[in-house]
Image 1 (cartoon, one colour):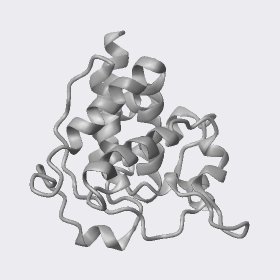
Image 2 (cartoon, rainbow, N blue to C red):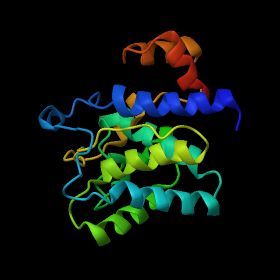
Image 3 (tube, one colour):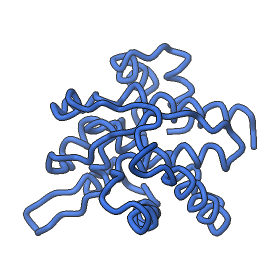
Image 4 (cartoon, helix red, strand yellow):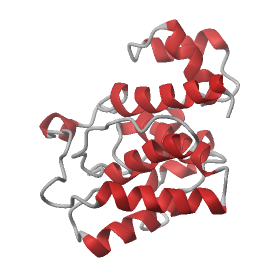
Length: 202
C-alpha cells in the first residue's frame, strides 16, 4: 500500500479514537473510565475475536479496511465514539444518523453487527458496540499493513437518540473548501499537518 495513504489511515484512526472521544457533548462520557486492558478480566478474548473477524472480512472484501475506518470516523465525529451510527430507527418518527446525506456511502455497519455476535457468543453482555467499532478500525489499519495501535477501551454505547440533524451539522460536507475543513478540525485541537492528512482520507 502507498506509504502516504498508510500514514493517513493511521492518523485518522488515532485522531478519531482519541481527539473526538468526547466531542459530541454527551455527558455520559464524563463518567466513563476507559483504559488499556479494560476487558482483561471480563472478556480477555475480545481483541483476538475482532482480529480474526476483520481478517476474514478483509479477505472477502479488500475494500473493507478503508470502509471501516470511515465508519469509525463518522461515528466519532458526531457524538463521540459511541456507536450511535449503528442505531436504526425503531419507528417512522425516529431519525437515524444514516439518514444524513453526509453519511452517504458509509458501509460495513453489518460487519460490526457480525463481530458483535461473535463476541456475544463468548462474552455475553460484556463488550460495547462502541468498543467493537474502535477495535475493528484498529484491526482494519493493521490488516492493511499498518501498525496495530494500542487503544483504550471501556466506552459505553450511546444513551442518546441518534440524530441525522446532528450528523448534518458535525460531519464536514464533501464539497467543503480546504479552509473550512482546516477550521473544523482546528476546533478539535488539530494542527494543520494533522488536518491535511485527515482531509486526504476522510
